[in-house]
Image 1: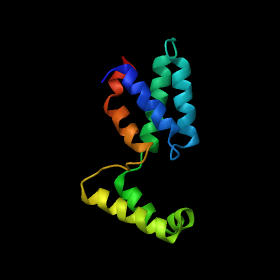
Image 2: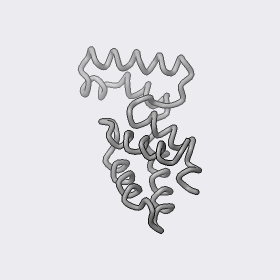
Image 3: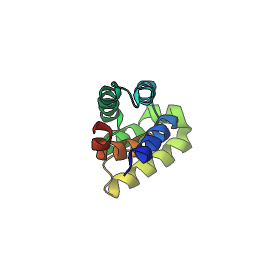
Length: 116
């Protein structure tokens, strides 16, 4: 993967509705640091934040079956979300596949591109 492709994934991750505020801030700090002496430090901070924020599949399944999911998505929405989470786990997925987690996994898999 080329660095520019990875940067586009980073931007996509930050634009996802499921991306938390702290990760959005880490993304912006990294983008602001591109091409500067601070780039590697910002990349390390971004990668640490991604590692902290990616939801493992068991956490996703637990959340999807929780009362909190019902409060957020409504009863029908939570039921569909839980079914999706269960299917993901059954398929062997290790992480959530939302718009923030999926690119986050790809970014971590290619972190050497950001650190070199």
